[in-house]
Length: 580
Image 1 (cartoon, one colour):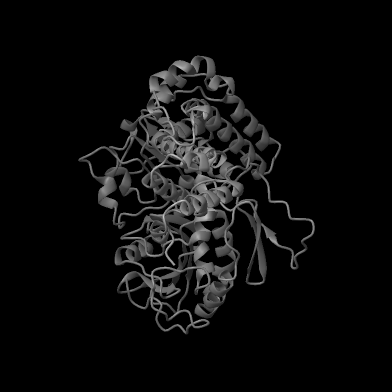
Image 2 (cartoon, one colour; image 1 turned 90 degrees about the vertical axis):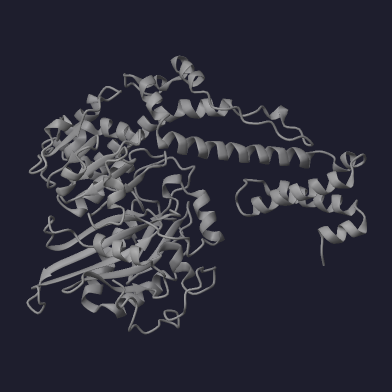
């Protein structure tokens, strides 16, 4: 697998041959490239080795042997797919070993402004694949088989698929020189900053994208170009960096969208068996996007094979199935994972105007290890009643030949409102656990956030539950009880508790900065003054690292307080606190 990774290539602008330093700070080679991509890989088929890594670009990017092996196997459809021509799909792998390229400050700032579901993954790589298999009599096997793979920590599937659609066909014709030029162009891109319209030039085309802010209200549709900016040639405007055509992905399972939403909300193990990596990866990504704006906290693999290093971990029967959504194409998984509680088998997508035949709900006992028919094999009973009005609306849209993006907007809005109706009572209860602001006084430790009491929350649902914002009936209490045991409750609670703790710190800092420090210092010992100085400095460092949302006026006041406090101390202590 190691052979030829990055060998034989001429350095572009002196950058390719440099030894890896493990970090790329702003202004260093490939810093801008690294804000978007980790590296670009080329995987080819070798008669002796099978799938082999032909090239890694930039060549100084370090991949472990296990990562190289995973990339090789996941970059080709398995033999059951029979993909001829060009096909695009994606995968997600766990990073092996420690972090090799710590994110610089610009990346952390960008992440802090983006929705949780769009922040870069610290422990996983996304692989975006463009695979070509065409007949070629000059090749020993009679086929040309090669994949171009973009490796990134960003879940921008829509953007990177569009990028591959432009780059890959040209690369297959011109090979390495084309790749050098493309990587150098990406190295000129602006940082992926949320809330801005970004123009990304590539191969004579400008891709125009908008990464949403965390505070944005999700609105379907392309970003609006600023009126004063005229680009030539006219840019290719991407409606989203990450959202797939949800309606197209869910066409065969529209009747069960709500049940699938519940399975995702509860973090249930789900196997998706599809006819190709493209269908598999799109279905898994569509399912995991159902919970937005809630971050999907479980593991998921858009495309997974029996060669993956985690195959044994996911298929063991000695413990309960892991909380993972697994996309596969090999029917062997039906036999290996028949003990899993939920298996979704989908067939070849049919793009006719009518709604395709909906997969049926089937008991797991109906599962056959060979020739399993399409269906959702589960013993799970949905807590909420099905929204028949949604299905009628989508069917009416099909009859009127409504565009797929409009149908997707209807479906996405329904899922967003469903998730928000579920989360809003939790948010309101969590906010009630915050100490009152009048209890936050300058010179005392701020009060603690009250613990989350599940029984107290459930008792309050009758007067302030999801029924206030959602017409759906059903066993909401039962759904919340199961949700409390899921990784998503744990992830949501930790995030909200962290944000509330930061808010408490900010309010406490503001209270200190509004108080009279000179009056406070009159009867305080040197130890107490030094303790205050150190605490204020620590808060300043965190605020400057964008870990605390502090106003600039408060920061300025805090710096003045630090100077005043240091000035009140003996010269020897001042020298220790402010060394020359």
